Image (tube, rainbow, N blue to C red; front, side, top):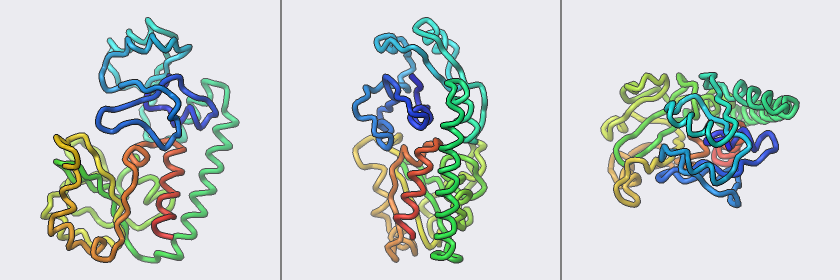
Length: 258
């Protein structure tokens, strides 16, 4: 089992016996693991993992000590101590543990070729047109810019080289470079030619609350909205930083822009 690391496991030609699930976000549907049972990782109680009888539990270094203890009582537990936003490094670390480094190197080479090809194609199509990415919830609008190194920015502005629209909000208080909190009023200065959006249901108290922004006049006045250049993408695909999710981001970008 590898909660929220399933992308890396599947990329290395393995399958988990249970997969990450979140009450608001669901599961990582893009991995196609519909036949694999789900585990509520956000619930905090890992004791229920014992029912799956895992041979190994693979975890990021972001849990409470009690949770690690629970896992160690259930099975052999390996903790990825590396704190990195570099998915290539993380994939190679996981691959090394399982003796699958050649698989990782081959997957990375194929991804890099795909990204270079996409970048070349998009540069001819878009020229100087700008792109913005918004994560929209009931309470927040977050813009991801080319200053970031996480889920969105490394692919959108790094790997495929799109031109980022400048930040129009206030830098995130969570000390995350490249993330800016926008107010509805800030949207008046968001003049990006193209706009990718995804909806975060975390703060929604009722079904569809996260989409109410789309009815605001400030939203309807955006140039990208008026020109029908807004592209909605899957939340967990884009809020993940694995090789499979990043490849699917490139697919989304090409489908929308090329």
